[in-house]
Image (tube, rainbow, N blue to C red; front, side):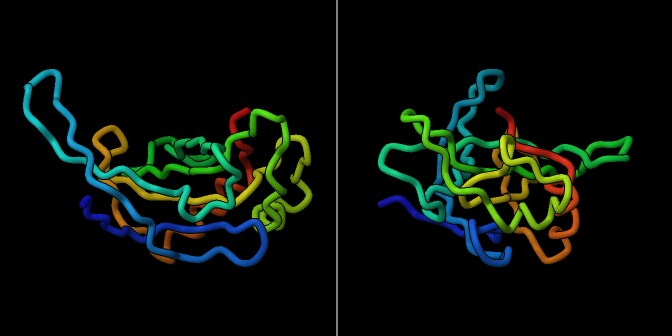
Length: 150
């Protein structure tokens, strides 16, 4: 049986307050095409914490920098959110992020469904690290000024 390991991540639920929670990950062995060596990475499972309909997937969006920064973040974030369903039905608007956006909120490009944010040491290699309360202001700053990729 595959061992699940948890890392602290941030959950922005559809309704309610954001909170830190244990994001489950599973081991994933990959072969490095350059060196030929096997390397173990962690695959996150944000779908366990999202209210997804049957066969609905999720999308991820990378946070490399924030408004006004001239350097990339040393530890980037990945945002996981529900994908639009094939039927065209959209998940409910995330009221938690809507409150963060305030007057900048736009219904047509709103963050929808439960949104999970994970922190990485290196996104390419899958090195997940735990979030802490100090990550909230950075992530909230991003949500205040950015919308999901369409």
